[in-house]
Image (cartoon, rainbow, N blue to C red):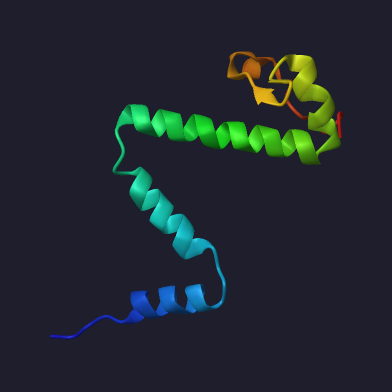
Amino acid sequence: MTVNLRKPLIFAGLTLSGSKIPRYLKEIEQVSLLSRDEIAEYQQAKLERLLIHAYQNVPYYHRVLPKAGVISEGKVNLEHFADVPLLTKDII
């Protein structure tokens, strides 16, 4: 019987190099075990964090998100998410 050490060695190398890939894979594995409702909550929380980050760090989204009603008083309102205009080359 031969043992395939390739996968553990790759993960060890990634971990030692400081790569975030092993952590992301573990997170994906954990999320895959959640119920549909829990996955929806997880996705919503991730989207809200992304929108807050974009609002705080990208001047374009700092202007657009409050105008669309997605960010108000530091809180996210996803009911207005569809009102965010698509970013196009012309806008850039």
